[in-house]
Length: 188
Image 1 (cartoon, rainbow, N blue to C red):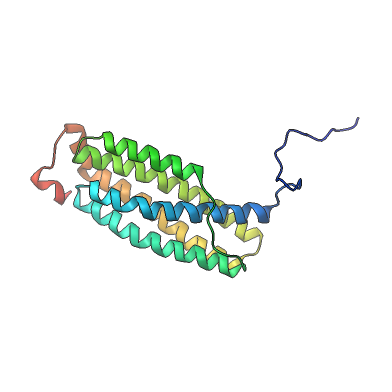
Image 2: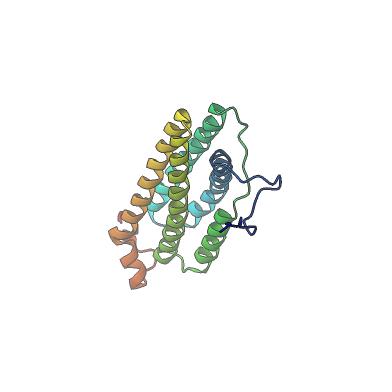
């Protein structure tokens, strides 16, 4: 019995199926766009946060994200490619959802909880993206890119853990209790 080729598969415009190298290059462009979009979103999150530890984490993450963008540029360069982004609908949606959630939250601990939740959605997206890119870089033998991507993956995981710690150390309890900008909020 003849097996018929599935003609419903989506293929690139040139008619050839994407190869792993194409997926890797496309993924790098995607996360490059995402990191640059995050650079634009972080200052607004910082302004809307009220918890001192959260503000510090956001400020530190902004500096870290700048370094991650530079690392991505190094990864592109190590493969002889120009660093360029490709619009990432996923990060656009996550950031838009975050803006809506944060803008609808009451100022103080509730808004801070919304910022943390929205930020963790970004972190989880980045962790998935960097994890996938590391796997591709490994099998494609892109050692320099792999080292750079692994470093960023580790930072994203630590950022996610830090956000959980900030939320768990009293902030979510204050949000649940409906407390607003209490004197001891900065000690959380």
